[in-house]
Image (cartoon, rainbow, N blue to C red):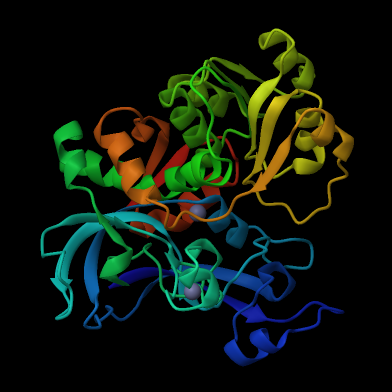
Length: 384
Ligand SMILES: [Zn+2]
Ligand SMILES: [Zn+2]
């Protein structure tokens, strides 16, 4: 079968000290400090075979994620930009949907023909965080498309317990192709759901929400917050096409942060009361959090989901005086997140297929990732 293979050289940067974990597993904890000269190529690879607890999925749609872009882009020394857990070579792609074509002997609740999507985080279920109910912080984590083969391929083998059926979406869309496109958007929409509802604990209907960064995660935050009763959703984003997409999925106001002073805009639009929830989905907290602090409602929250390996000076007095809280969000597993997002889609509360701005075949997947570098698109979909 065909698959998009990323290979790169294991060349730790000068001064970077490899951990024991990195030495024994060959997995980089800090990808951008180790992997150099990445090469992305659609290759002929072996079709995966399933274990008794796995299913084989024929991939129907797989979205290009910001992290795929950060494997394609390199710094001046040729290192990948992605700062997280990685092991190469592997097949990329982790926001996918497809049809079950083979079922392992121990699998009970999936059958051939089922339409499914799957979690990207392969949590172990027996480490300390997993046993305590925190699968997004599994210490034995494998990640599809990062450390193990992903879904920019014709087929993928995956544990049945990570799969979620999309059958309910058929009633909404009435079209298989659309169901698979929506299904491939469940993963990023679940990252948004985890941020707003699981980590930050959500908000009361009538709340004011400000979202910084309107890439696919920020757009899902906008859609989910509007659908959940936010009175005003205010978005900030550099790219004009992305601002338009935010309007489409429910933003009440969108601004180019270079043209306004964001905290002033938020204070104006909230009658001087500030936003009850601020979401950082831009990955630029050194800029955005400083604005959020100045427009934080009493009892307001800040949720960080964008990734940025940088320190941010905060004036903690603000958190005291305004009863503020800051939350860090990562992942999408557990906590009824995937099924809730699928229900929101099936009921029509959110329609994330509106953010798809380009479609490519598997043969063109490198072009698809190259296109994403412009940071103008909503979601780019690859359809094997
Ligand atoms: Zn992703
Ligand atoms: Zn675990």
